[in-house]
Image: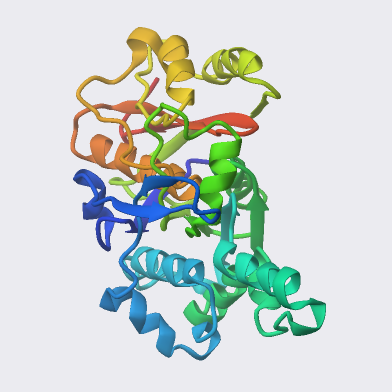
Length: 333
């Protein structure tokens, strides 16, 4: 079975749509939750009409911003294929921090005002499955729905799950979404983890979506290979995990630069001369959202005829690595 990409969508700090993946994004100075440090972060403009329009949907009126980002990106991908059978379309979402804004607000109420005053209205929106539930209800899909949680490499696990669903015949198409939202408190966490120290890491937020199909057209970029689950527990183990992850793909295949922060050193050592030249690193780190953006960027390079195949690594900052190999529809290895 050949699995291909039908369409895609994106909400980025730059603007709305996959076109925003081609140019640098604005950065906004934000102050961390403790007030001790300040950092650059790339944030979505929540006043954009493409975002605010989802606030009119009954299911989304009290939803966290991540639900708006996800629904907009997914809507773009689905609207590009208007005749798709939504009853045979599954949905998989991958998260790292997930519904961060309402989680911080809910637990702040508990710790500052007492458990009696923690809003029961906020609590449902702290659950990872909540934005996915809102999305499928709003867009009308009725296939299987699944959420996966991990670092950036979780996106590779979601691709694997989608592949399994289609090979088993459970669905014909799978809408995959990666999304993250920003709260200043995450800067403290990233700082404590050592991710913000002298490596130029710029946290970001947004969402991306791709629609995979088991019946690709002659123009569909093909998902030709996957490697996932290459774990590490220390930075010293990360190099070996990266080598093993990329060894699952052809040695002659070019690799797209996707690493941010401290993992750029790992990527440089692991990839070496296999790196695709003339391609810049991502403008920010939005975890699973960035992984989708990287996948869309790679598919665009293939569609533009700049390469026939490309490996897209998903360098997780906290626990594991994964990668996908994309090829042109006519490519034969």
